[in-house]
Image (spheres, helix red, strand yellow):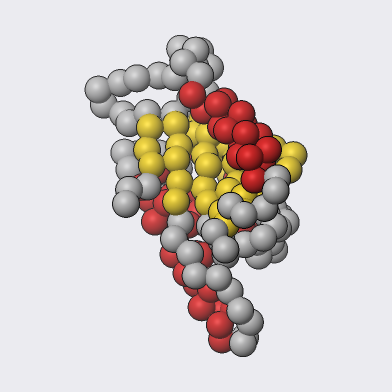
Length: 178
């Protein structure tokens, strides 16, 4: 059976100033932010799979695949990163609160880790998920084409030119290789 589970979310950068009781000026937004995020997400999924195996629970082997783009609605506006990640380890996004254990929570924790804010739960709100963020594609199912078309339409958001910002100093697109 050939299947794929994909989740779509937006990774926002913190505003300058205060977030709750925290000051954001020292969040690590340096070059390599998305690489740090992806590395953290892969490590967290590997740890999750290892924990499930220790508990004697079956967990699908998977490779994390992803695509992201840099979006900035207006010059000088707040940048954010629309993201599509897929992994067959999870069949639901799970909760996105501080105690969450599902994919949504791991994405949030990876984003905080990439910014050097792993222990700052007030930053969890910087990751936004749409309603029904997870898509399930199974090649041999009768509804495969319909679901693929719906996912393609959802991903077309990431291809719009109007809000893309291109730069010689900052990457505006990234994806998994191989």
